[in-house]
Amino acid sequence: MMIHEITEQVGRHKRRKRVGRGIGSGHGKTCGRGHKGYGSRSGNSNPHNGGGTRLYKMLPKRGFSNAMFKTHYALVNLSAIDARFDDGAEVNAEMLVKHGLIRDTSLPVKVLGNGETKKKFTVSAAKFSKSAQEKITQAGGTANVL
Image (cartoon, rainbow, N blue to C red; front, side, top):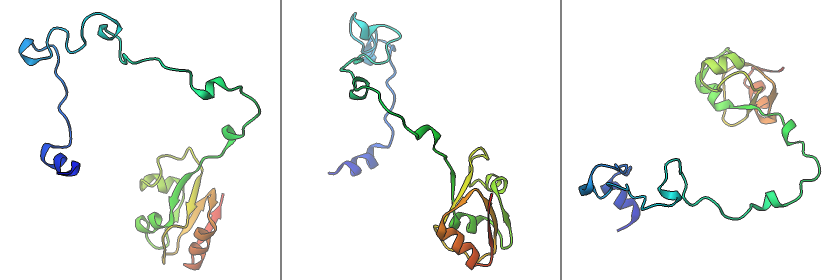
């Protein structure tokens, strides 16, 4: 018997432990916490708290990183645009939010070239991959860089 066969029979989720329901339940009185000590107290979420100092905290902090200045983009594939928009549609950040392809307009949009299209789109975005720009123009559409 394999582990995937067991989970099919037993079920996906384990029932939660209901503690403090009397002696007969096996989890009454101390509720499986034992007697005294930090682990038995309220407010203790992790009785195994501790251990060594992590390596990155021990090493000296030197130099400068540009990581915090990196521009993050909301990514959209050409295949997703092709599936949700009609021929001749104007595609911009507001329309992508409306169709559920991006969460909101706080990040600039980058269109990636995954997928094919035969529809003529007018796509306005902050950035395009080379393949996306080629595929949009080959289909007869336009790719406007904001």
